[in-house]
Length: 608
Image (cartoon, rainbow, N blue to C red; front, side, top):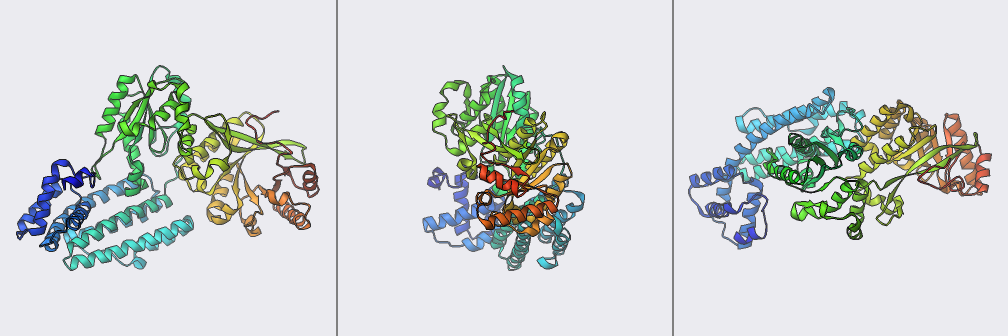
């Protein structure tokens, strides 16, 4: 056991002072003939907060590793499990009650019903074993949850519906199996199955939350999860704090909390952390993204004091887990945020780094060693995400009237990276939505005092992201005159993939005066019937078609698309207009707008 401890096996819960206790307990389970001795060990284990699941895994591991004779282990394990059952079920009963109160705050009244029915079903299941009350319905097809779910089917995406039904079926299957084990007095297997049921239920509640999340709008400067200021507000405010100190912190292993207990519990954790920090002697706090917070304080001494309090005193009582942090701090100047971000990459090892010791002229050493993932993160905080614009020419007005907004990233050498060089990686990162929101924000601000129209590209994952769409709506509401000159573009194949979601989004965003466009139309997934249903103002014909206008079939296709679009009140944009021949051809075919290198390459500043 001492060797296992030194190897950090089960070190998350097994304290060094408990090794002798656990060794003695394992001997009790293996060899004791005294039931009271086993009961005593189980009760003491509960007092020490030793998790049932991990302890049983440890016992199996030790028996197999040491090749022990199992003796009375099987019968004693049942006694041990029976003691844990009442304790775990009672704790879960209280936890489920709290969950109902929590979700009441984020689920609309109408759909809150389906969530509460699931939690109450769990409560009834637990009460059957605690108080011998009636069992809830264990057949998924007859369950009230399933009936209510189908009442709301118009609000549910296909993937979410499939996930919902799979998890719902699994919960009932596990409940049935757990009941069988309990009735056969096989308490160990009951506990094992019940713990899995509980885990699946957490995921199930997360799916319900994602489906019926309350769509409240807040300021573009407020993070909707923690309700504190966000990164955009931080970037605007930091110049006002010169002479103060920036403390940048990350939650250690936050992804594991999200993975184990679900995104809703993760959001609750972020809210709890931010609320705790707000009560400390600080000047301000911002959630800059994901699990990273920027805290404004007076000086370096206070930075260390504040970090110590944060790192030692924030406990998640529901799972008895003390949150730990890592971070960096620096006296605020024009480069403090960027330098702290570089420093924080090394702070995982030593908790807190004084970034004042890092000279801005020497951070090239760090830059050279950064992976593309780290570069994208640093580029975000150092504002190296660039907004490029490509001109769109009106063939009727004979002038440039629109610009498409495009994302670029400046690397440490000053070179400009195009999406093909980083987008696949960025889409897998937690900061992806921050990049999308950054482009939305920069686009609105750039064209705020202009009469030009502009378009922003969104991906399907952006439309599926609650925070991103909430931010877009806030921008649209905050800048109504700019919104009327904005167009949202979505790739045609992504619209077809999730038609109902896209159709609902286009319809809603159009109600604010924002225009909509289908990009790369005709690129291989075209189904003309979709055009009749979507709320569209423009279609952009794919460049591979436009470049082949010398082919008679392509000529006919473009002509047909233009005529159909015009009959539906839409306008047509031709992409990849690279020479005079193509320009003349699309003009002949009555295309409305031209975009391509002949008109202008993407550029950071518009020359007027």
